[in-house]
Length: 197
Image 1 (tube, rainbow, N blue to C red):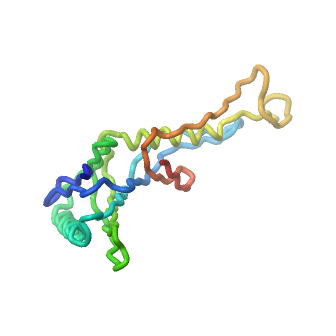
Image 2 (cartoon, helix red, strand yellow):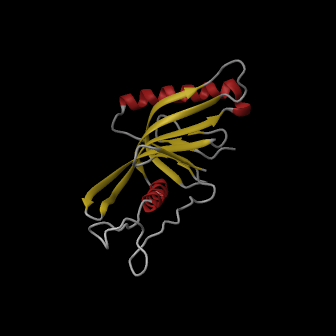
Image 3 (tube, helix red, strand yellow):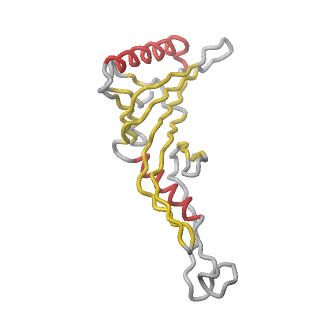
């Protein structure tokens, strides 16, 4: 039995089974200063902007898929008539709570398809409890740390290029592994996409 739910619209929608994948994209607000010692990057804030929920109809088959399509149609009409109102996506096993607007439903009902997959795409207004934002922040800070290091140059040390040794400060990034069981995909600050499982 699924525990993911969409609430706050014309009716609540309870997922028949848990989603296969929950992914999000985010935007970083950074400030970069060029200095003699290198680039200084300040990570000011993170905002989750898009959310995608992928699931299957499973044993519910075409009948359940029809219910999904009908729910999405009614929700899109409701949002059109109530542009100032929002809905929530909740997934309690991970603690996710997003305030969202539905933008798209994708589904497959081909004759050779037996699981009838579908996916909801949302614009995110708020990550209510900040769990996704915290995970993204940790991953981004780890990525930024990987690029940190001091090199000798004409401005620092004896003018030869190489890692600082001895009494000078050196930083080694050890990396970061997301919490076990957490999954998501995010767009990185340099335009790349990062997937965690």
